[in-house]
Length: 296
Picture 1 (tube, one colour):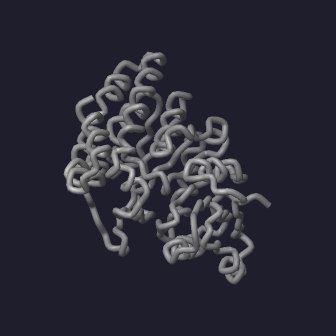
Picture 2 (picture 1 turned 135 degrees about the vertical axis):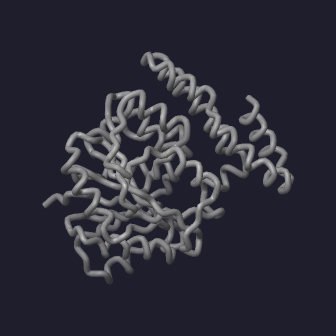
């Protein structure tokens, strides 16, 4: 029987934080879930044996025969979804015990919503609460849901997120039919999630912002996205991403969203914050990439 929610968990290697992520799913008060762990051909081995010891038939393990990379494995996870709704959590993130219960209840209240965004607590590599600059900006620009659920759709949704991506991809609940129909654009590995959300907005879809904090998102300097920021690779890709969506918004008649995408001010400021690190590391290429994004 198909579960109400599929939890897709792409990962690489059997790390301690991966096991904590799995255990946080098993601790959910909402029981009608299926967890699919998709291991991306790690040479260090996978977690199949450990998962088997859990004795939980709601947990499925799959191993890619060849390494697909981040974008490829995300696309593989999306293709494997069977439930009407899914979430694709990070292998170092944690669900609080009521995460899926809150999302499932909200999906009943908002039957036509394509995305649900709960409240998120940011933690560091040691699991302690943290609020670095990018997350302080996200908190300021996130729609205020303290007086009730907030629904965003169309140009309003696109403009809000293209200004500053305040969504936390691993915490989102997605409506499967819409997400699978559109799919991830694998050209934009750094912005896979934002691209799909913007595609949903362009297709007339909606996102609902919820107030309860139900998820812990781990932010640490060892992450792939942070490494890409220091090398400048992230910002080279982001510039192409923003300019392409500016054109698509303009074609849709969304003048405001197109202006915000062309300006991509928050992305430029984020790049500027990474410049001292690139200079200190004597990364000429990274420095040039970052400067091109800030002033281009």
